[in-house]
Image (cartoon, rainbow, N blue to C red; front, side, top):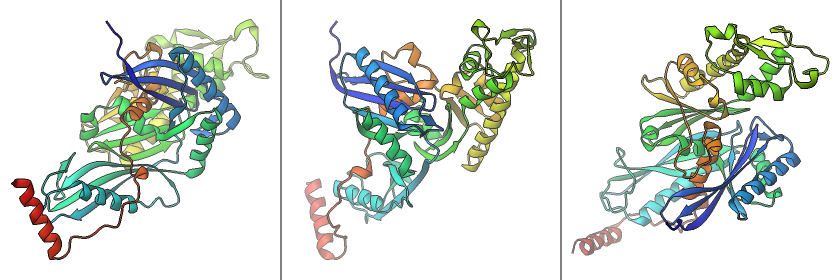
Length: 427
């Protein structure tokens, strides 16, 4: 059987606080998005979603993309990049215009979008996204394509994401320093939502919690679009630091212990299960330090480890709950989707469900074929979402050319034109 022909290459680069990952996908002639190559490197130049070391970040991006290129057997030049810094702000701008009951034409839609473009006030920030998400007829009926419909009032909801300019400029410089062109910088919650949430979930209302390494992003979807966003400067790396500090070991060993033995739910057997924390060759875990107060002879109980993990998780969930309440996510029955690298911890969904008092599921990337098993977990949801975003290439008002001067419908000549147009259409 012949392999589908790849018509377009899409490359995504997710620059996080813990890892830099890249994905090269090909859109086939059948419409599918197939993974051709992936790459990953440790991130040492990013703190809390912001670039802290330009040289290290450039090197990590270059090595990650080169690894993906070797696997895919191709060279790439353009990439889609994620941004998960805490300076993101989400807003919805609603614009309407009087149609007088006439049919909606493309010129009417263009004029409406131009008005919306001019009505966006960045307030000193950079507009990262400005996307029309939903049109309305007569202020009530939501429609996807109003072209050709009759309306007294035509409106559109424009989803706007703003960010501070300096962090975006630093991110752009790092990627271009790796000899890559930036197609667009995409807000991490938007990309992750594409990969983890169904269209129905986004329409009915759902909260997306990205438990990343340095930042936890809480975003709220309703009516098919992102309507709220809040960033918490805590994440899974804080759990690792707590483990390293509590037991006097290196971060690298603390991360391994967290991944292999860590859990967010306590079990009676945990008080009997012992975990070896002494590093190989008998070296001290940290210069001048010994095992922490919960350790005995280079060993700790798993219960002590779980206690440290849950203490930090409790702090994060308190902040998440406050963010959800601040965004009006108080209705019962609404679901929370937990994703990001921190969502891979055992029992974290059950813990979050108890802490938040809402149904919680773990969100994993979907919509891509031939996804490697190592990249199919929630830690790679943003990366997969970037590829999906690049493949869809949604309409963005930032790229709209300035429209010519709009002629308003006033007076008999316009009325006459409308009548003649209606006669030609119906006869």
